Length: 477
Image (cartoon, rainbow, N blue to C red; front, top):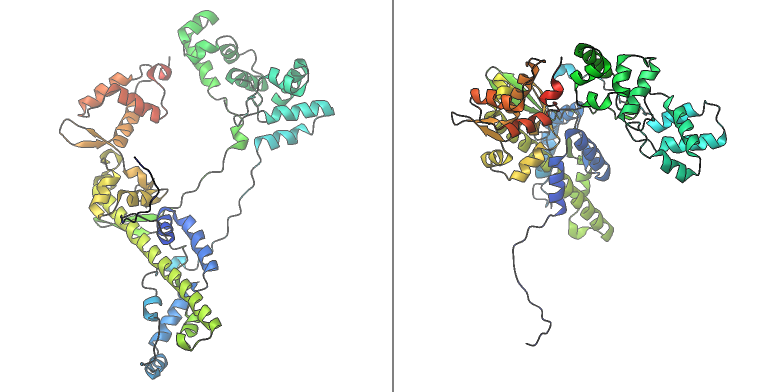
């Protein structure tokens, strides 16, 4: 069979992500705080965009309604050709006007200055330079500090440190003891056992039962074999329990005291308020800049006809025309984002009405596909709306994804949210007798008695998601 190159033309539909479509999807997905920064950047890049404040907007509306302004409009030549319908572009604030309560208009917001946090290595190095160490010891100590992980534990074995630095192992041991004497207490340990022993030494508790539990009975302590420990140490299980409670007050990851991240503050993107028997949804976008098309460039476009303009004026008009289209698209995209978010939240309220009325025990299973089908949108659009966004409700602040979860079948045929099942499991464990904790099988049996069909392995999975230990580790003497 002979093969030769050839060219063929064919037509087929394809979805092309234009830059404007990509921008619209990005604006739909970002939370309010990030959107605020994006809009400010757009105002810098596009001269036709300007921010509207309350005073300027009221003055413009009053000026438009004045008799002089009406007379000037009537005096204009209606037959003059205008290549742009400015009534379509010039926004009177109907789309971007946001209600601001009267008591909040005079509030001054001060910029929050971020506080620089010191890392664990920086804190240890600062303490290290106050000690009288030789240059060789100081260099080895800095190497060891650089080998600590975020917990404050030594991540590199000492023999490898000695091999890498060319120093004797005894010297590495001595310098490590120096680092273990620094703050926070417990830093520089090679494992959990050593970390806890360092903290007990700092408390001068080397002869206590807690010390013996860690030093001599660590494996039995980890597996909570209290009767075996009591037999070997010749004490009562109650005393062993008290020693274990004292050990629980120690910090197994001291490095996180210094290197922990700043708390992440949540600003709700939506606000749900109850008025009588209805729930009203509002966007928390009062801090977003309200945009409109600047009127300063209207004269440039109205001056001459395009055919009468010079080459430079034509380029200017084309530049303004491009920025005008971009500004109009941005304003329409922001408005579409608002409508979509409110539409999704209203649908969530309809589906989860019992949760808003009665609490988390009545949270129903809900999927993105169900919401997308009801509001006639694609599932990916609903996913973008719910991504990294929060809503303030009468029952607290929740992430939008909180309202979506899988379902578990009950004996009466109805579905129960998996989140509700986890909350029920947590309640059962909180109310259990600490001397006889509930096993996963027993919890599954109790849930069966309430009509919830759930397997033991599912209970174990939900318990692990709640960071709750198994029954044998929760048992107390």
